[in-house]
Length: 130
Image (cartoon, rainbow, N blue to C red; front, side):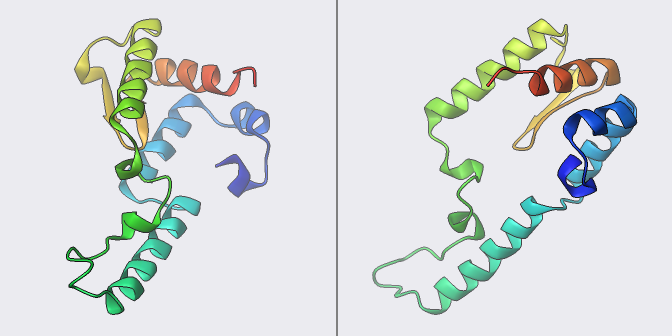
């Protein structure tokens, strides 16, 4: 989001409240925008092109858009998915969000119901040492 607005992450966090950032995150899950949407559109076009030229004898199943999106969750191994679930559990424990109704996990990340907990989680992610 900072990139789309031409700001650094620190500038964005200084100018936007946790509530507003959480609302934008929720909106992006309902109506994707930015590079993620561009990748999805590109995947649709490539799948259509690949299916036009697909030999059904060699490739029985039609290609899907996610086949052409390298970051798509369908490309993750079970091991990396379990590791990601473990990280979500660690964050829940660390920020006191151990009730399942307080969060929503999906392929796009974690959205916490409590805006202050969401803000702490976001700040923790941006303050990691490389």
